[in-house]
Image (cartoon, rainbow, N blue to C red; front, side, top):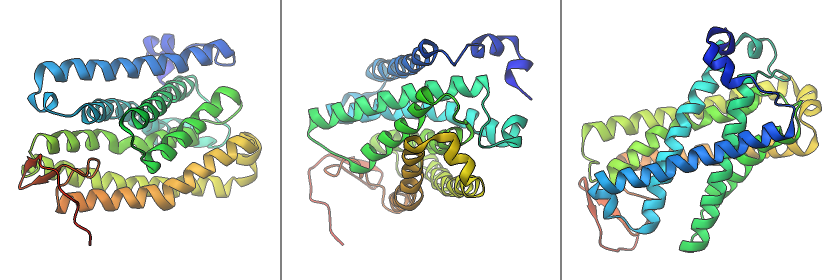
Length: 285
């Protein structure tokens, strides 16, 4: 099954000459602007409809809107990644060299999203004088892996699409954080969403093992297809996600289920399902 063959509308959207520099850069810019629009729309809607949002600090408002933006991108990533993993026969037949016009579209839009992520993270770090090393490394490697497709047009798309599918947890993460800030950590919906999110983080770990399996059993072909620099960036990201980021985030989300605390902002905690706005020192074990 191919979406470009099934629906003429999809065919029109995806039907571009992606070998042209101007086309690839245009879609990268489009991804940046689309998700910047989601960020600004989230701010506008939340300002009008959410008293919780209006009570947040400026730094927390940025985090809120980026959480929404990541959640929307996570939905796109799930559709594209699951299509490649479960449905598309071209990617089933060849996981190293395969490309599709729909995958070009999604990967370039994703590169634009991660460009926005990097700009937002670095600007936030400068303005608010913070530095989350895990977030910075994760977004730099993610952007590097997808931006490699802009330069190396022969790179296969299966591994980048699986990298996008790792964002499957972001919609649940967005919901969890918003409800936590709204003081709803004692509700059944928050706890159920937290269980789903933890399950998705375990699915992320299984997906990284699948990516390693594809790479190891096609090692020479993957190295030849990616080129040295793109190969180093992709495998640095896969190594970091597999051994550091996924285990750490899975642990933190499980800990959050047992003790609902906003660990992104250590000076604010959630106690008994309501926000405690008083500044306090985090207890050390």
